Picture (cartoon, one colour):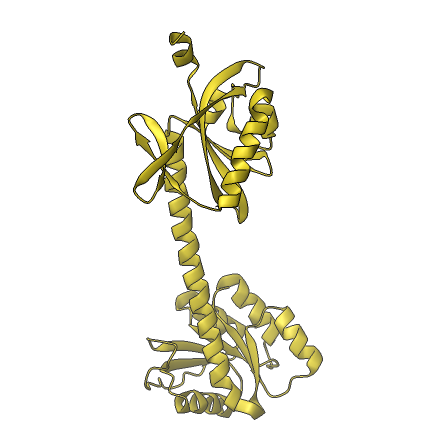
Amino acid sequence: MVFLRWNRVKVGPVVNKELRILILEDVATDVVMINRELRKNGLAFRSIRVERREDFVRELQEEPPDLIFSDHGLPDFNGFAALALAQKMCPEIPFIFVTGSETEEMAVETFKKGATDFVLKGRMSNLAPAVQRALQLVEERKRRKEAEQALEKSEERYRHLVELCPDALFVQSDNHIVFANSAAARLLGADNIERLIGKSMKEVVHPDYWEMMQRRLRQLREDGTTFFWKSVQGRMQRLDGDVAIVPFIEEKFVRLDGQVVDVEVAAAPLTFKDRPALQIVARDITQRKRAGG
């Protein structure tokens, strides 16, 4: 294995650290050319050259690089084989082919197999832009992963709060239940939430109240207003700015066993899994109605 001297130059516009570049190349002068081109474009990097499979694998295991450059054809190792190894061991690392010749068919195959980019040795001016694109891709993936993780944590906290809520919460899309909490399952007499998912709201709302509910939900959709709810003297009310309006409206729901229950219901538009939907909050007031006469 041949080690090149470390190269330290000013930081490029996309990176804020010194890059470690693993170069799979059997021609030492080509590596010198690669280093010269990167240095000319102001990238801070250190590079190590390997020729054999075992050396390539060891470098990936011991100190994974930020970038991998590889020629296509080497005496003892194939560039596509190196790409497959890198994808298995370090799939997040950009892999750029730097090769002396590239037919159209090979270029297509290069991308089909998952390479980040390829650069012809006769057009080394394309190398720095390819590196910049690869680093931008890494940064975008990192930001997307962080955003997804933050969203997952946020959704988990929301699910926890929803499960703690004593009121029944439904999300309906196209008049079918797509989400419900445990309180909703108890209200409708379901032994688990899954029995409610996919159920038509027309089976839940008492026939005497179906048209009224549809008119109310249509009005919410036409308003296009997303609002929040808070408890006001024990009742959930809508908030527009600082003004609480639209208290719960009394309706009747039908449980899975056919029993009719009196409920207070409120609704709000929202987006659920990128689709327009409505959140419905319901509270069982059967006992209160009976006590009132």
